Amino acid sequence: MAERPAPAADAGSFRDPSGVVLIAQGRVFRTIEETAWKHVDAVRSSGILDRLVSSGQVVATWPIELADAPAGLTDGLPQNARRLVEHDRIPFISYPYEWPFSLLKRAAVHHLDLHLELLNSGFTLSDASAYNIQFRGTRPVFIDILSIVPYREGEYWAGYRQFCEQFLNPLLLVAKTGIPHHAWFRGTLEGIPVEDMARVLPLRARISWRVLIHVVLHARMTAYSRRANAAVGDAASKVGRRPMSKAVLVWMLSGLRNWVVGLRPRGTDRTVWGNYEQNTSYTPGETEAKRAFITRYVETRKPTELFDIGCNTGAYSEAALSAGAGRVIGFDFDQGALESAVARADDKRLEFLPLFLDAMNPSPDQGWAQRERRGFRDRASADGLLALAVLHHLVIGRNVAMAQAVEWLLALAPSGVIEFVPKQDPMVQRMLAHREDIFPNYHIDAIRHELARRGRIVSEQTVSSSGRTLFEFQRERGDGRRDASEMMRPCPRHA
Image (tube, rainbow, N blue to C red; front, side):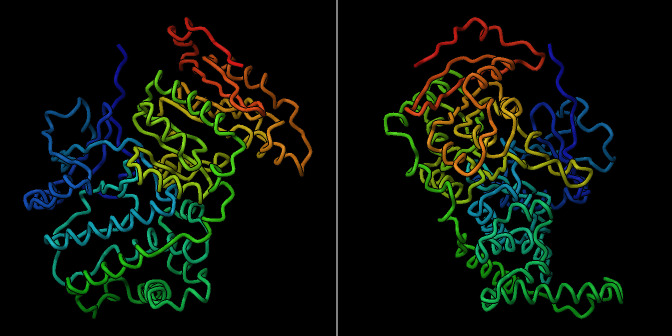
C-alpha cells in the first residue's frame, strides 16, 4: 500500500501569523492561535458565517478537535496554535494575474459585497487581498476567515490601498488603456502601485472625479505619507486623523462597487481569436466529427478535472462537460476569447473556469522563497487534457521542437486528445505566408513517433478535408510503464 504524503504547510499562508494552512490527505486545514480564535468564535456565534457559507460567498469551514486531525498534522507548530478548522477544498487554485478581466471584476465586487454584508452584522475585513478569493467555475468564493474581525466604530478601512492596487488599478488599466493586466500584476505580486497607476493613465481618464480621488489624489497622499513616515515616524504621522464613521465607510464601499460594476474591458472585441468559432476553417460536418471524437474520449475516461489548453470560447470545454467531465479548467491567451468563454460558462452554468495562459511563459513559482505563489506546472493535477489546434502555434508559431511541445502537453495529464494541424491547412499556410518554412519535422508521422515514445496512441481520426487529425493518447506511468489495461487495447485508425 502506498504511503500517504506527509502533511505540508501551504507556503503562501505565512503572512498571517495567527494561522497556518496545512494540506494533508487531500484535505485543507488551518491552525488558529488563541487571540484570533476569539474573532472566529464571534463570527460563528453571530450566525453570519453560516449565512455566508450557505450562500456560497465564503468557503465552508468547520472546527475539528486536534485529536481528530490526521497524524503528524500539527507537529512542529507553535504552542499557541491550539485551534484547528477544516476548509472545503477548492479544486484548482488560480491567481489574479491569471483571471480574465470579467473574473477579476467579479472578484472585486464579491469582496465589496462581502465587506458590506459583514459591516451590517458588526464585522469588517482586516485586509483586501485579491488572493483571498478563489473560483468554483466562474463563481467567486472568499477563503480567508481570519480576515473577518469585529468592527470598531471610527476605524479606517485598513485594506483600502490594497483593494486599489490589487483590484481597482488592474481593472482600470484594462478599462482605460486596453492593456491587459496579467504581465504587470504577475511582475508585481502586490498589485499595481497607485503611484504607477497615476503616471500611466491617459489625461482623458483623469477627468473622472473617481479616478481623481482613488488614483491621482491617492497617489499623492501615499507619497506624502511616506515622506512623513520617514521624517517623524509612522506613529507620529497618524496623529490627528479623524475617525471614519461606519456610514462613511459604507458610502465609500458602495461607491466603489457601483464604479467597478460599470467598468468594461477596452479592445477585447478586436482580438485575433475572439471570433474564432465564426471564422473557423471547419465545415459543420467536420466540427461535429471533432466534437464526437472528444465526446467518446470523455465518456470513456470520465475525467474529474480536464484541462483545455487553448480553450478559445469554450465550445469544446462545454462538449466535454456534456459528455461527463467533472469540471474543466480552460486556458487561453486571447482576451476576447476568454471573455466569451466566461460568458458561456455563466449563461449555461458550466463547471468551467477560463484562465489566461501564455504557453510560452506560464505562471512560474514566485513570491517569497519562490514558493508563495505556485507555478502553473506545480498546480497541474488534471486527469484529462484537450489540446486542440495548439501544437502548430507552439512548433511553427514559436519555434518549439515537436518533441518538447508534445512532452510539455503530456506532462499535464495522463490521457487526453491532441489535434495535429498539417501544413496544407489554411491556418498553417497563413502562419507560413511571411516566413521561411524551417520545420521539416512538422508532419503527422513525427507526432505519432513522439506520442508513441511517451505512451500509447489509443486512437486517431482525421476530421477535416485539410487533414486535421485528432489523437487520443495514454501517457506512460510515472515509473515508465504503461497502464496494463491500456496495453491490451487495440489502436484503431480512422480514415
